[in-house]
Length: 178
Image (tube, rainbow, N blue to C red; front, top):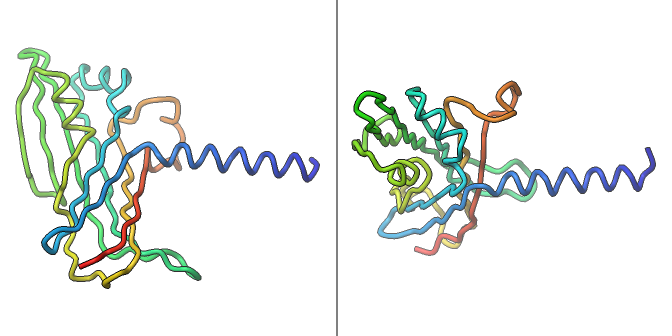
């Protein structure tokens, strides 16, 4: 393989990795001593996920949200993290969806609905979740929020790939100004 081919292949793999990593849109906001995190994955509730939900299997979207600080000469440092789990269980007899939202294992909300639009939004869109305190942040410091998603059951062609930990990910940088 020539050097030009190798360079082209590395470039192609980098573009593919960056495209796959940008599936989740993340928006951080600091207010009143808290870091509020909004994130959404519009393409998350696709036909495969709808089929899994309608089969009656408990379906969960587990988002690992990390507050991180980039370091120039070493690995980025994770300041703190939170786990947001959105789940749905479809009851074939009543034709209703039972929804739940857990943050770090604590139940934050539960709901029952017939509307599939509400189900899709409940699993893939979150607004201003107060996940982190700003007490550990330095003024004028550069930080970022990274969100990674893992779904259960796993659907798609990567089902058999044992090293694929996250289905999608995204991040957003911000400067902490108190």
